[in-house]
Amino acid sequence: MRIPAMLAACLAVCLCAGAQAEPPIVIKFSHVVAPDAPKGLAAERFRVLAEQLTHGRVRVEVYPNSQLYKDKEELEALQLGAVQMLAPSLAKFGPLGVKEFEAFDLPYIFPTKAALYAVTEGRIGMGLLKKLEPKGITGLAYWDNGFKVMSANRPLHTPADFHGLRMRIQGSKVLDVQMRALGATPEVLAFSEVYQALKSGVVDGTENPPSNMLTQHMQDVQKHLTVSNHGYLGYAVIVNKKFWDGLPGDIRSELEQAMREATAFEKTIAQRDNDRALEAIRDSGKTSVHILTPQQQAEWRRALQPVQQQMAGRIGKGLIDEINRTTAEVR
Image (tube, rainbow, N blue to C red; front, side, top):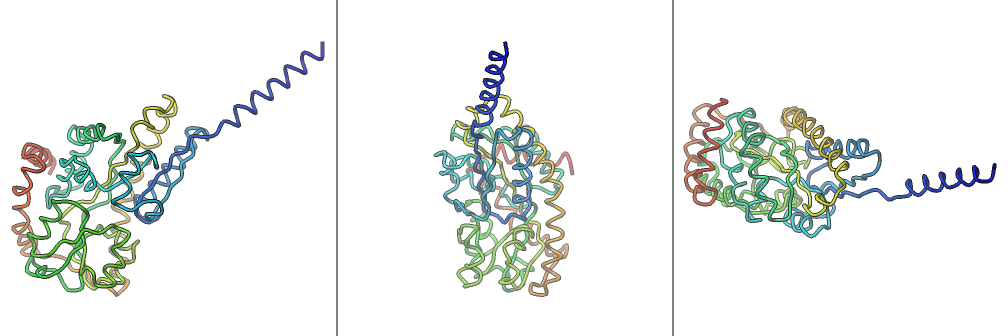
């Protein structure tokens, strides 16, 4: 009577060991910013939450600072399945063929964060993420960074101060037109190359939220910063659609919960980190921080207002009008 009981116990142990030996599903999460930038901190929070909520059935490997891929390479890598998850800036989807995302690059289109969230968390934002699916991409969430400042090695008080400057931009037609409207020459560079380009004089200045500027030590190579808040920099967290659709339903639900919690966390730290970064840049004594007067701000707005009309044919006049109506309702 004892032998069958022993056999049953051994079988149970073997089955348990077999279940434990099943390898976890690996998600490679690649991004281009520093681990201590808001996006980097949120990616790490997602990693912890995903592994906890799936009880170790998923392992997330986070690769910051372009360790795996640079700006121009990462979307192709995702589509090919070389990585499973990214959080690229919204400007990256225009070159992919989804030009509607370039609406987020339009200067002064979002007067406040509340107005921005009315777009990203509402029908417009969800509709834009759906447009990625034919590209083999599933959009999971929008992550925030913040409003951008301008920096250069000379003060930037008025549009006339941009004349003759070479300004680094992401690969966005809207940002190209924006810089030309200010009188500057735009230069497209990968984010990982910006510090060295500024240091060597390949470009004279750039635009960034303060947290990106600080974590990349750009205050060491930029003498002036203008708090212009002229544009917005945000991200979409995306996954390879084939990979995502192939996950077991319970794991996908747990990862969606992890993403919701990581997104809420990211939004709470983004503005805080940008405020702290601006103070740190000012306190470094290496970069002079300039605040635009109301008159100067009006000059910037006048110079950049035509960009919306110029880009209407590319982005879609209907979409731009809908965003403007949505943001006007929450001012």
